[in-house]
Amino acid sequence: MEQGSDDDVDEQQDPLLRCAERVLEREPVRVLQPRGQDLAQGRIADGVAELDEVIERLPGGWAANVGEGGALLSGGERQRVSIARALLKNAPIVLLDGVTSALDPVNEAAVHEGIERLMAGRTVVMVAHRMRTVQRADRVVFLDGGRVVEEGGHDELLRRGGRYAGFWAIAMAQAAGE
Image (cartoon, rainbow, N blue to C red; front, side, top):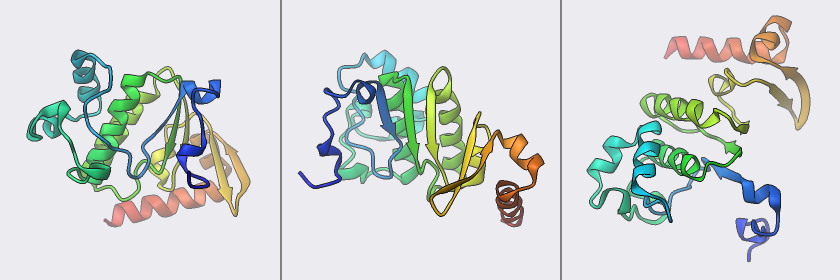
């Protein structure tokens, strides 16, 4: 095992990790076939993650082999497959890391919709660099240099006019210019 790899952690021995699912890594996909899951559940998850057109174009649909690291899928499609997998697992705790990094606008919108559905009834911890990704969070922890500099809800942090508000203004100005 490599030090720092996912193989170092035995999910079966740690009750918190057994109930948590690390979703939306940068290269999360193996095969679309949900292991041990009913195909009807898979169809529900693919509808929520907006995977219908992806599944239809792949030979074998849900059972398709998508190549090492999901090579046959775009980055956004891999993210959407991860959302579907998390929905199938129905984990009460979901960790999201870099969910919208390097996505085109169409896939980013689809991923955001999937995340909204995924968040319902779950505890979600999200690491994000894009400000729009955290806009609907109940609580935002804004870090700078590894330290917490602000904490609160999105609207509250905007009203305070601190670092978060400054980053938000820059992000919105950049989005308006695109």
